[in-house]
Image (cartoon, rainbow, N blue to C red; front, side, top):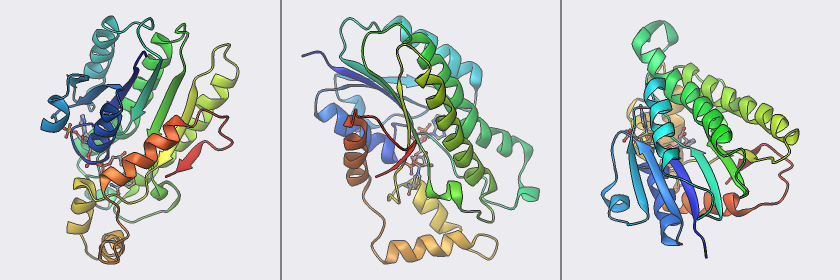
Length: 244
Ligand SMILES: NC(=O)c1ccc[n+]([C@@H]2O[C@H](COP(=O)([O-])OP(=O)(O)OC[C@H]3O[C@@H](n4cnc5c(N)ncnc54)[C@H](OP(=O)(O)O)[C@@H]3O)[C@@H](O)[C@H]2O)c1
């Protein structure tokens, strides 16, 4: 049987790494796009690491062109892009954020997934296999939070971006499945970093600590399994944003 190919940004740790391992475990080929690499995934022969800093759009474009020189539709059963990578920093009121940190956040959180989605759909437009774009979002897309304006607004942007691209794909002769996935709370570096920043200007930190203490934060492996189930549902999605 031909394998499915899954491109995952930020497969070096957290949810992305757990998702890569879950997909590799069932025989998919995984391409991880990030700056670092996970020892566990790199040991797998069906894993390919692409070193890219998503805060540089030039690097993103170059990486995708190079990657697609090595991919053809003949030997695969489907192809998926998972826009997973994101950063929390800077966690501060917007007037306290440095311009370089604002730019890096927006590049990784919005511009990179947009460019990756564009290039992915362009390069696979004629491929006669199922194509999926799944973008990791957050419940915070709909909750205004102090010191998280860039993160919340980026996730809200991604939700609307997903909805618009779905409309475009409806008009396409060979539509791709386009969804956003809210993973809920997972115990990752991102969660730990948010908890470590509790304080008056960041009330969400206290709420995350309470959720952690109440055992509501799931292991990345459990979240990854739920994401795999959502990716496997090939029926018509009546909603753009799916929750694990
Ligand atoms: N954890 C949660 O509770 C939670 C809740 C809601 C939504 N989410 C969403 O789920 C997704 C994964 O979150 P996570 O908690 O797994 O995050 P994480 O543990 O902090 O991992 C982030 C990943 O993004 C990559 N990344 C960050 N900046 C990058 C850059 N400049 N270039 C390339 N890669 C970069 C990192 O790779 P390198 O550092 O190696 O480059 C890493 O693999 C994110 O979209 C997040 O917003 C998470």
